Structure formats: C-alpha cells, structure tokens
Amino acid sequence: MQPDTLLHIANFSTLFMCMVLKFPQIFVLMRAKSASGVSLKSLLLELIGFIVFVTYQMYYDYPPPTYLEYPILIAQDAILLLLILHYNGSLRMGLIYAFLFVGGWRLLTLKKWIIDLAMSLCTFISGASKFAQLQCLWSSKDAAQRVSTPPWPQLETHRCLCGLGS
Image 1 (cartoon, rainbow, N blue to C red):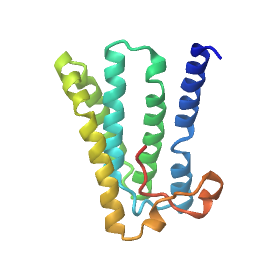
Image 2: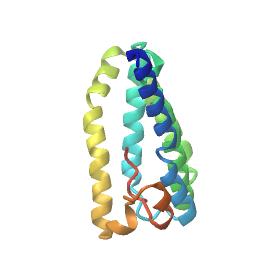
Image 3: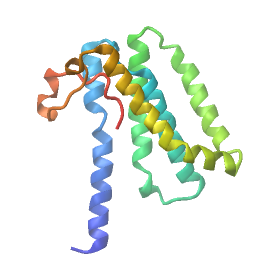
Image 4: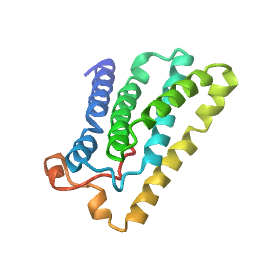
C-alpha cells in the first residue's frame, strides 16, 4: 500500500469518526429531554478551544484536510449547546453565545499575536474543559448514570450526559 493511500485512509477515517462522535450524546440528551448533569462549562470551553484551533489553522493557510474535522465538531457541539439551553429553558441565551463566539472569532484575527497567544492557551482550555467534566461527575456522585462506557449498540441503556469532551 502506498504511503499516500494510507494517509488518505487515515484522514477519511478520522473525518468519519468526527462526523458521528457526538451523536450518542445528542441522542441521549434528546431522549432524556433533560440537561440535568450536563456540564455546560465543559462544552463552552471545548467550543472555545475548537474555534481557536480552526481559526489558527485558517489564519496560517494550513491545508483544509489538516483541520476539517474541527468545523464538524463545532457544529455538533453547537447542537449540543442548543439542546442544553432548550432543556434548561434558556434558549434565548443561544443568541448571546452566538454573538460572543462570532465576536471572539473575529477578535482572534485582528492581530497575529492574539491568535498566537490564543493557540498557546488551547492546552489549558482543553484541560479546563476536562476539569469541568470531572467537577460535574464529582458533584453528581453517580458516574454510572452520567457516563457511558459501553460500545455503541448498548448505548441506548446508558446515559452519557457529562461526557461532552472529545
């Protein structure tokens, strides 16, 4: 097998997995019709990290195949955010979040040093997202009801409400 072929297979498999990565969480949230136990902070931090990363890649003209999965993940996180806001009864906050995310995205590209600084903080943002997930699990005191570890076919019987990070 040619190295280029192997690379293309790896790229497409990563892209495919990212296309369906958040589906179980979306379906469980929709089925539960409740956002209780969901870490909104974790999701918001994850969205910020994804937006910074994709903006950095676009700003420096990286080839799209190197970051194409991030817009897909952003779209799925946006759906999760809307579901959480809907079930919490604060869907109007979605407009505020949209304004802040778009404004922040535009702010990132004003100066080169801003996007560089934001990119260097992505590791801390990602860590904070994971920490927020752990806080959610700790406060719920019931990880079995919040995190799903079985494979996809068995996912219907479990809830993975806090595990919003990738």
